[in-house]
Amino acid sequence: MTTDELLGPALPSLSPSRAADFKTCPLLYRFRSIDRLPEPPTAEKARGTLVHAVLEHLFDHPSEQRTLQTAQSLVSPQWERLVAEEPELAAVVTPDFLASATELLQGYFAVEDPRRFEPAEREALIEAIIEDQLLIRGYLDRLDVSSAGDLRVVDYKTGGAPREAFEARALFQLKFYALVLWRTRGVVPRVLRLLYLKDAEVCDYAPDAEELTRFERTLVALWRAIEAATEARDFRPRPSRLCDWCSHQARCPEFGGTLPPFPEQLTPATIDSRQLKQEVAQP
Image (tube, rainbow, N blue to C red; front, top):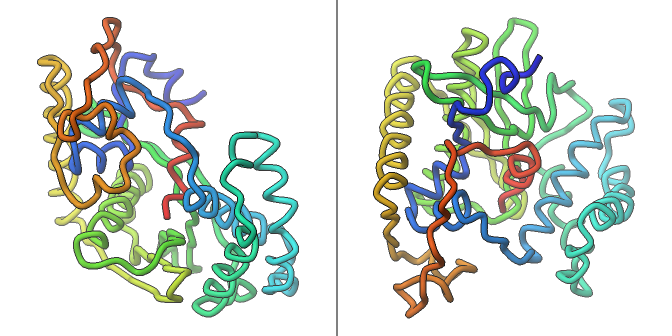
Protein backbone atom coordinates (compact mmCIF):
# COMPACT_ATOMS: atom_id res chain seq x y z
CA MET A 1 0.00 0.00 0.00
CA THR A 2 1.37 3.40 -0.96
CA THR A 3 1.61 6.45 1.27
CA ASP A 4 -1.17 8.11 -0.72
CA GLU A 5 -3.47 5.12 -0.12
CA LEU A 6 -2.76 5.19 3.61
CA LEU A 7 -3.25 8.92 4.00
CA GLY A 8 -5.86 9.69 1.39
CA PRO A 9 -5.63 12.48 -1.16
CA ALA A 10 -6.02 15.38 1.28
CA LEU A 11 -2.48 15.47 2.68
CA PRO A 12 -0.51 18.25 0.95
CA SER A 13 2.80 17.30 -0.62
CA LEU A 14 5.90 19.14 -1.64
CA SER A 15 8.81 18.24 -3.89
CA PRO A 16 12.26 19.86 -3.89
CA SER A 17 11.67 21.48 -7.27
CA ARG A 18 8.35 23.04 -6.30
CA ALA A 19 9.78 24.21 -2.98
CA ALA A 20 12.69 25.79 -4.84
CA ASP A 21 10.20 27.41 -7.26
CA PHE A 22 8.43 29.19 -4.41
CA LYS A 23 11.72 30.31 -2.87
CA THR A 24 12.87 31.63 -6.25
CA CYS A 25 9.60 33.23 -7.36
CA PRO A 26 6.16 32.64 -5.80
CA LEU A 27 4.50 33.43 -9.12
CA LEU A 28 6.52 30.71 -10.84
CA TYR A 29 5.25 28.29 -8.19
CA ARG A 30 1.70 29.33 -8.99
CA PHE A 31 2.17 28.88 -12.73
CA ARG A 32 3.64 25.42 -12.32
CA SER A 33 1.79 23.96 -9.33
CA ILE A 34 -1.60 25.69 -9.25
CA ASP A 35 -2.29 26.77 -12.83
CA ARG A 36 -0.34 23.73 -14.10
CA LEU A 37 0.64 25.67 -17.19
CA PRO A 38 2.55 23.65 -19.79
CA GLU A 39 6.12 24.61 -20.57
CA PRO A 40 7.65 23.94 -23.98
CA PRO A 41 10.47 21.40 -23.99
CA THR A 42 13.98 22.75 -24.35
CA ALA A 43 17.10 21.13 -25.68
CA GLU A 44 18.80 21.52 -22.28
CA LYS A 45 16.04 19.75 -20.35
CA ALA A 46 15.69 17.05 -22.99
CA ARG A 47 19.44 16.44 -22.93
CA GLY A 48 19.33 16.18 -19.15
CA THR A 49 16.49 13.66 -19.31
CA LEU A 50 18.36 11.61 -21.88
CA VAL A 51 21.64 11.54 -19.95
CA HIS A 52 19.83 10.60 -16.74
CA ALA A 53 18.11 7.74 -18.57
CA VAL A 54 21.39 6.47 -19.96
CA LEU A 55 23.10 6.55 -16.57
CA GLU A 56 20.13 4.80 -14.95
CA HIS A 57 20.21 1.95 -17.46
CA LEU A 58 24.00 1.72 -17.54
CA PHE A 59 23.76 -0.05 -14.17
CA ASP A 60 21.52 -2.72 -15.69
CA HIS A 61 24.73 -4.11 -17.18
CA PRO A 62 27.24 -6.27 -15.32
CA SER A 63 29.99 -4.21 -13.71
CA GLU A 64 32.66 -5.11 -16.26
CA GLN A 65 30.43 -3.81 -19.09
CA ARG A 66 29.83 -0.38 -17.54
CA THR A 67 32.14 1.44 -19.89
CA LEU A 68 31.91 4.66 -21.87
CA GLN A 69 31.31 2.59 -25.00
CA THR A 70 28.33 0.86 -23.38
CA ALA A 71 26.93 4.19 -22.22
CA GLN A 72 27.33 5.66 -25.71
CA SER A 73 25.50 2.67 -27.19
CA LEU A 74 22.51 3.48 -24.97
CA VAL A 75 22.10 7.06 -26.20
CA SER A 76 20.12 6.41 -29.38
CA PRO A 77 17.76 3.72 -28.03
CA GLN A 78 17.03 5.73 -24.89
CA TRP A 79 16.29 8.83 -26.96
CA GLU A 80 13.94 6.83 -29.18
CA ARG A 81 12.14 5.57 -26.09
CA LEU A 82 11.78 9.06 -24.64
CA VAL A 83 10.42 10.49 -27.90
CA ALA A 84 7.95 7.60 -28.16
CA GLU A 85 6.68 8.49 -24.67
CA GLU A 86 6.70 12.27 -25.28
CA PRO A 87 6.66 13.04 -29.03
CA GLU A 88 7.01 16.79 -28.41
CA LEU A 89 10.64 16.18 -27.42
CA ALA A 90 11.49 15.60 -31.08
CA ALA A 91 11.03 19.32 -31.74
CA VAL A 92 14.10 20.26 -29.68
CA VAL A 93 16.59 18.12 -31.59
CA THR A 94 19.51 19.94 -33.18
CA PRO A 95 22.19 18.38 -35.39
CA ASP A 96 24.58 18.07 -32.45
CA PHE A 97 22.01 16.98 -29.86
CA LEU A 98 23.02 13.33 -29.47
CA ALA A 99 26.71 14.20 -29.78
CA SER A 100 26.39 16.71 -26.93
CA ALA A 101 24.78 14.02 -24.76
CA THR A 102 27.72 11.75 -25.51
CA GLU A 103 30.13 14.49 -24.41
CA LEU A 104 28.34 14.73 -21.06
CA LEU A 105 28.79 10.99 -20.62
CA GLN A 106 32.51 11.50 -21.11
CA GLY A 107 32.36 13.98 -18.25
CA TYR A 108 30.68 11.36 -16.08
CA PHE A 109 33.40 8.78 -16.70
CA ALA A 110 36.03 11.41 -15.92
CA VAL A 111 34.78 11.67 -12.33
CA GLU A 112 33.47 8.20 -11.55
CA ASP A 113 34.11 4.55 -12.42
CA PRO A 114 30.74 2.75 -12.38
CA ARG A 115 32.47 -0.63 -12.47
CA ARG A 116 33.60 -0.23 -8.87
CA PHE A 117 30.28 -0.13 -7.02
CA GLU A 118 26.66 -1.28 -7.07
CA PRO A 119 24.00 1.38 -6.47
CA ALA A 120 21.39 0.49 -3.88
CA GLU A 121 18.67 2.46 -5.68
CA ARG A 122 18.29 4.35 -8.95
CA GLU A 123 15.64 6.90 -9.95
CA ALA A 124 13.86 6.01 -6.72
CA LEU A 125 10.78 7.74 -5.33
CA ILE A 126 11.29 8.51 -1.66
CA GLU A 127 8.79 10.19 0.65
CA ALA A 128 8.23 11.02 4.31
CA ILE A 129 5.72 12.87 6.47
CA ILE A 130 7.04 15.73 8.57
CA GLU A 131 5.23 17.16 11.62
CA ASP A 132 2.19 15.01 10.74
CA GLN A 133 1.08 17.58 8.20
CA LEU A 134 3.22 17.58 5.08
CA LEU A 135 4.30 14.83 2.71
CA ILE A 136 7.71 15.55 1.20
CA ARG A 137 8.71 13.44 -1.76
CA GLY A 138 11.01 13.31 -4.72
CA TYR A 139 12.98 11.11 -7.10
CA LEU A 140 16.65 10.80 -6.32
CA ASP A 141 19.08 9.93 -9.10
CA ARG A 142 21.06 7.39 -7.14
CA LEU A 143 21.54 6.10 -3.62
CA ASP A 144 24.71 4.23 -2.66
CA VAL A 145 24.94 2.23 0.56
CA SER A 146 28.30 1.08 1.91
CA SER A 147 28.90 -2.23 3.64
CA ALA A 148 28.88 -0.30 6.92
CA GLY A 149 25.44 1.15 6.14
CA ASP A 150 26.60 4.66 5.25
CA LEU A 151 24.40 6.46 2.70
CA ARG A 152 25.60 8.55 -0.23
CA VAL A 153 23.03 10.51 -2.23
CA VAL A 154 24.20 11.24 -5.79
CA ASP A 155 22.67 13.77 -8.15
CA TYR A 156 23.72 14.17 -11.79
CA LYS A 157 23.85 17.73 -13.15
CA THR A 158 24.22 18.19 -16.90
CA GLY A 159 24.86 21.92 -16.72
CA GLY A 160 28.13 23.54 -15.76
CA ALA A 161 29.29 23.82 -12.17
CA PRO A 162 27.36 26.80 -10.78
CA ARG A 163 28.26 29.87 -8.84
CA GLU A 164 27.63 29.81 -5.11
CA ALA A 165 24.00 30.98 -5.30
CA PHE A 166 23.06 28.29 -7.81
CA GLU A 167 25.02 25.62 -5.95
CA ALA A 168 22.93 26.44 -2.87
CA ARG A 169 19.81 25.64 -4.92
CA ALA A 170 21.28 22.26 -5.90
CA LEU A 171 22.23 21.48 -2.30
CA PHE A 172 18.71 22.47 -1.22
CA GLN A 173 17.45 19.58 -3.34
CA LEU A 174 19.91 17.12 -1.82
CA LYS A 175 19.15 18.26 1.75
CA PHE A 176 15.51 17.59 0.92
CA TYR A 177 16.41 13.99 0.02
CA ALA A 178 18.67 13.67 3.07
CA LEU A 179 15.79 14.72 5.34
CA VAL A 180 13.46 12.13 3.79
CA LEU A 181 16.06 9.38 4.23
CA TRP A 182 16.75 10.40 7.81
CA ARG A 183 13.07 10.44 8.74
CA THR A 184 12.32 7.11 7.05
CA ARG A 185 15.52 5.14 7.74
CA GLY A 186 16.90 6.80 10.83
CA VAL A 187 20.25 7.43 9.16
CA VAL A 188 21.70 10.79 8.17
CA PRO A 189 23.44 10.39 4.79
CA ARG A 190 27.19 10.66 5.14
CA VAL A 191 27.65 12.36 1.77
CA LEU A 192 25.48 14.43 -0.59
CA ARG A 193 27.26 14.39 -3.93
CA LEU A 194 26.69 16.58 -6.98
CA LEU A 195 28.30 15.37 -10.20
CA TYR A 196 28.64 18.19 -12.74
CA LEU A 197 29.10 16.29 -15.98
CA LYS A 198 29.77 19.23 -18.29
CA ASP A 199 32.78 20.38 -16.26
CA ALA A 200 33.66 16.94 -14.83
CA GLU A 201 33.53 18.30 -11.28
CA VAL A 202 32.38 16.78 -7.99
CA CYS A 203 30.83 18.68 -5.09
CA ASP A 204 30.50 16.77 -1.79
CA TYR A 205 28.59 17.95 1.24
CA ALA A 206 28.23 16.26 4.64
CA PRO A 207 24.99 17.12 6.48
CA ASP A 208 24.31 16.48 10.15
CA ALA A 209 21.17 15.87 12.20
CA GLU A 210 21.09 19.37 13.66
CA GLU A 211 21.22 20.91 10.20
CA LEU A 212 18.47 18.63 8.90
CA THR A 213 16.29 19.52 11.88
CA ARG A 214 16.62 23.20 10.98
CA PHE A 215 15.95 22.35 7.33
CA GLU A 216 12.77 20.52 8.32
CA ARG A 217 11.53 23.62 10.13
CA THR A 218 12.37 25.65 7.03
CA LEU A 219 10.25 23.36 4.84
CA VAL A 220 7.28 23.56 7.20
CA ALA A 221 7.53 27.35 7.29
CA LEU A 222 7.81 27.40 3.51
CA TRP A 223 4.69 25.29 3.15
CA ARG A 224 2.78 27.56 5.52
CA ALA A 225 3.80 30.51 3.35
CA ILE A 226 2.51 28.63 0.29
CA GLU A 227 -0.80 27.93 2.05
CA ALA A 228 -1.11 31.59 3.03
CA ALA A 229 -0.39 32.72 -0.52
CA THR A 230 -2.97 30.25 -1.84
CA GLU A 231 -5.61 31.42 0.63
CA ALA A 232 -4.95 35.05 -0.32
CA ARG A 233 -4.52 34.20 -4.01
CA ASP A 234 -1.41 36.32 -3.84
CA PHE A 235 1.66 34.92 -5.58
CA ARG A 236 3.93 37.82 -6.37
CA PRO A 237 6.76 37.74 -8.91
CA ARG A 238 10.31 37.99 -7.63
CA PRO A 239 12.46 39.30 -10.48
CA SER A 240 15.98 37.93 -10.82
CA ARG A 241 18.44 36.83 -13.46
CA LEU A 242 16.51 33.57 -13.67
CA CYS A 243 13.71 35.48 -15.41
CA ASP A 244 15.77 35.25 -18.61
CA TRP A 245 15.03 31.51 -18.74
CA CYS A 246 11.38 31.65 -17.69
CA SER A 247 8.82 30.49 -20.24
CA HIS A 248 5.97 32.42 -18.59
CA GLN A 249 7.02 36.01 -19.30
CA ALA A 250 3.92 36.62 -21.43
CA ARG A 251 1.77 36.06 -18.32
CA CYS A 252 4.01 37.85 -15.83
CA PRO A 253 3.15 41.43 -14.77
CA GLU A 254 6.88 42.21 -14.51
CA PHE A 255 7.03 41.83 -18.31
CA GLY A 256 3.72 43.51 -19.07
CA GLY A 257 1.81 40.23 -19.10
CA THR A 258 -1.65 39.44 -17.78
CA LEU A 259 -2.21 36.83 -15.11
CA PRO A 260 -4.64 34.03 -15.96
CA PRO A 261 -7.74 33.71 -13.76
CA PHE A 262 -7.00 31.98 -10.48
CA PRO A 263 -8.37 28.42 -10.49
CA GLU A 264 -11.68 28.20 -8.63
CA GLN A 265 -11.38 24.56 -7.60
CA LEU A 266 -8.35 24.10 -5.40
CA THR A 267 -7.33 21.09 -3.36
CA PRO A 268 -4.21 20.71 -1.22
CA ALA A 269 -1.26 20.65 -3.57
CA THR A 270 -0.24 17.18 -4.70
CA ILE A 271 2.37 16.17 -7.21
CA ASP A 272 1.88 13.02 -9.22
CA SER A 273 4.64 10.56 -10.04
CA ARG A 274 5.01 11.63 -13.65
CA GLN A 275 5.50 15.27 -12.69
CA LEU A 276 8.04 14.25 -10.06
CA LYS A 277 9.86 12.12 -12.60
CA GLN A 278 10.12 15.10 -14.94
CA GLU A 279 11.78 17.09 -12.16
CA VAL A 280 14.71 14.68 -11.86
CA ALA A 281 16.67 15.73 -14.92
CA GLN A 282 17.23 19.38 -14.13
CA PRO A 283 20.33 20.72 -15.93
